[in-house]
Length: 325
Ligand SMILES: [Fe+2]
Ligand SMILES: [Fe+2]
Image (cartoon, rainbow, N blue to C red; front, top):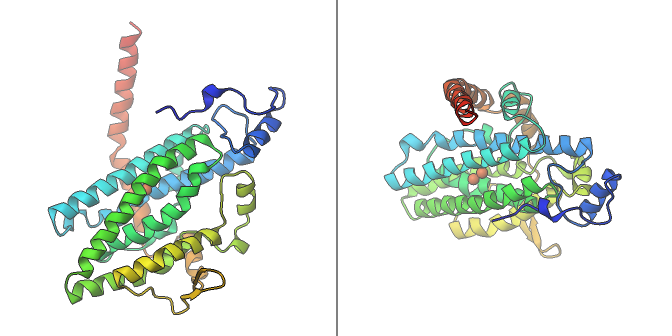
């Protein structure tokens, strides 16, 4: 399927001599900026930071659930979980490829991740204590990711927007499989129902924090919205997630651990309590329960994979030599 708009030529009233005007016109017309188009340095830097952080989150995000691959309760559950982890690896690859269209090198991004100079989503610094966590991650964490990512399908940067279309389809599937696992546990024994409730209690607040700090503490949001990278503020997305999730929790038969949660008829939305923002700051600073473990594991995997990269490079060089003969 040809999704590229490159062949469509210049958009709007732009002249080649006015690249900044062309950029502004494309943004105003809700069209896409493509890799060869001129773009402001700050737009490029914002996208590199955001796409890299997103790619790193997909890759690091394999670890918490990967913890349960060898201990899944049945072959069926293991196959589902394995497929999900592989999807997340794929998401990471699409996103690194999207970042490369902005002129950065993937090896450099990996180096920045393992040296702590680039971040990944703070949610993946929490441990997965029981198999119910696998279901709750699918339901809440992939659910929050969907709220964040569906609007990114309309992001002004073409390669990022196109990558998001496929990623979102797969995230929806992850959310459904997580919910199905939880429904199965809830139909099980009392101990299994307690296990689900315990997992919900531990993951609810960190899931709300996935949308980032409150709007008042999110200085980059206005510029990202003006550039049509972002479509909604952190608080708008958080509200959307709560409104989507509360009825699902009721249907499942679990309690969300927030005494302030109540329906607000005037707003036609759920009121909810304030997450502990100091906890988010601590996790971002590297002091979450699993930060060090996640990076150590990523670094070890990168080092263990060195021979694969060397072999691939040697093979590519050899093939080049043969084709030029
Ligand atoms: Fe993903
Ligand atoms: Fe996912």
